[in-house]
Length: 274
Image 1: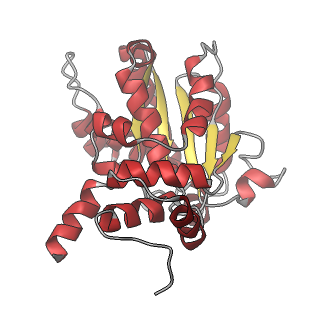
Image 2: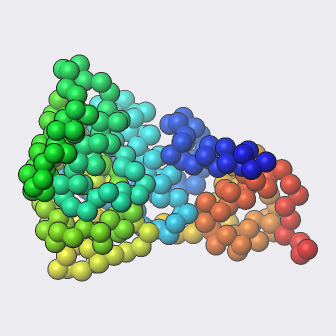
Image 3: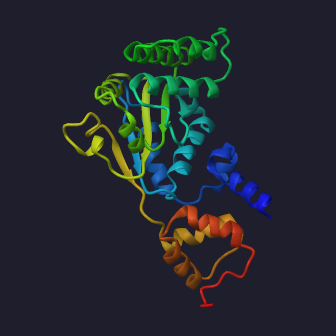
C-alpha cells in the first residue's frame, strides 16, 4: 500500500506529467493561465513583460507555470518564438549572478534539442565551472544563453520557482541590480517566476527588482473550483454540502483538494459528523 501511494504521489506531481497529461488535468486557475499567456502571445517588440505569480505552498503555482511551458511547446506559433527553460523547483545552488546564469545554462542543456552545429552545452558548462570570478562567470554563461537564443531565433522564457527564497541566500548585493539590468535590456530573456509571498526585493523602492514584475496573486479556490477539481481528480462528482466542507477543511488549497480526491475519491467521503 505504501509503495502504491508513493507511485500515485509521484504520478500526480506536475513535474512528472507529460504536456498532454498536464493539459488534460488542468481544470482550475484557467483565468490565471489566460492572464499569464496574454502578454506572451502579444508580439512585444524589443521589450518583455516579466511576471511573478504569488501564492502559498499548494496554491497551484508549479502547475500553472508548467501549464504555460506546455502551451508554448504545443502551440506552433508560440514554439516558433519562445523556448521555455524550467528551473528546478528549489534552486538552492544559486547564491550569485554567476551561479544563476550557470544554473540557467545547466537546465537549458538538459532541455534543449541536440544541436545540429555540434555545440555541446554540457562540455561548455564543464569549462565554465572552472571560472572563479563570479562577474566573468555570469557574463560568459549569459553569453552562451544569448548565443543559443540567436541560433534558435527564439526568446527564452525562464521559469523560476520560489524567487523569494533565492535572494536571502545571495550574498553579493550587486546580483539583483545586474539581474535587473539584464531584464530591462535583454529582449532574448523573459522571466516568469513564482514566490510564496511578497518580499523585500519587489516591495522596497530602493531594491533592485522593485516594479520589475507584473504580479499575479493566487487566491483560494472557490466552491465551484473545488467541485471541478474534485471531479477531475477523482472521476466522481461531489454533493454541494460536501464541497462546502471540503473547502473549509482545505482552505481552498488545490494541492489538498486534489490529494483528498485522489486518495478518497473511491470512498464514501461525507460532510456528516463522525
